[in-house]
Structure formats: C-alpha cells, structure tokens
Image 1 (cartoon, rainbow, N blue to C red):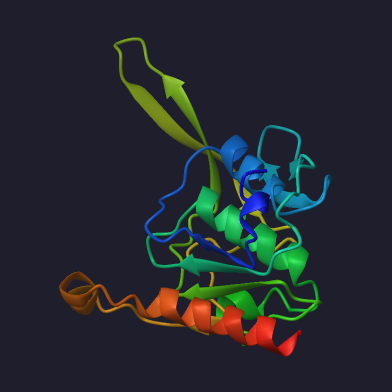
Image 2 (image 1 turned 45 degrees about the vertical axis):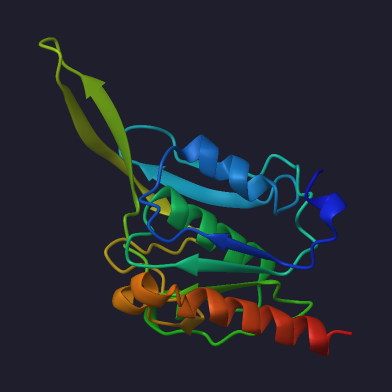
Length: 195
C-alpha cells in the first residue's frame, strides 16, 4: 500500500545474485504481481502426487510495467519468480525462446514483463531435507520443477529478452550498472510510447 502512495510508474525487480530460497516465499512474491490462482510453478514427483502452486491473490502491483534483472547466480526460487511473471504477463511469447534465444519481446499492453541481464543458473529440481540421527542431514532430489507452460529450464537457465553483460570492474570502480540502465531505458521508452 505504501508503494501505491508514492506515484510509482514502473517496477524493476532485481534477482541478480539470488540463489533462491523456499517455494512459499517465491509464491508470496509472485502473488503481488499476478491475479489470484495464476499458476506460479508446477512440480512432478517420483513418489508424491504431482502438484501446482498458484498465486494467492494480492496482485496490488499487477498494473505496473515490470523488468526483472537476472544473472548467472539467479537460481531456483528466483527463477520460479522470473518465469512465472514472464509467462503470465507476456503470454504471447513462446516459452522455448526463453531458454534458447532472447525473444526480444518489448513492453506493451499485452506484454508487461520483460527480462534483462544474463542467463540464469538453471536449477529446476525439487529437494527435500532429511535429518539424520547423528545430527547431519541429507538433501534428496524428489521431483522436477516446471513453469506454468510446462517448460523445464534445468541445466539450461532462462535467457533474458535483452542480454546485457555487466562489467564487474566498471561497476565497482564507477558504479555503472549497464543492466539497470538498460531496464530504465526500456521502461522509459514504453511509458513514452503508451501516452
């Protein structure tokens, strides 16, 4: 609610360097941007019933154009967020283009999310943590993760709509963030053209 009172025009969601986290948190984040019951991700298990996870219906930020910034360290839950937003809010794009080539989609009334940056990590499995008697634990892969359109990006990652490299030396020496600058440029072009 406080964001809505600040007269914002667009949103940039930065998931660079985000190695992921827990599924409920990624569903919660996506729920701010998508209508209730929009599919966030699907899971296919070996020994459990297959399942799909849906947005919980907050969607207070769904009307704003959105750029998601990614890099090679964006993984797991952050990839769930990126792909759920991209597929739900830009349905005309082909899912295959996101893993094989940048789709070059532009922001429009029919495509209000684009990805900018570098290919993501590509961790697309479901894991379970089992505690062991001696105090250790064992992480088991128990299933596969899929996007709303049944896309698997495991070991492939997501290739953004606009591939923009970030030079770490330039970033640390002068603060130049080429990916963030490109996101702002694309959003500004969209707002200018839609007036």
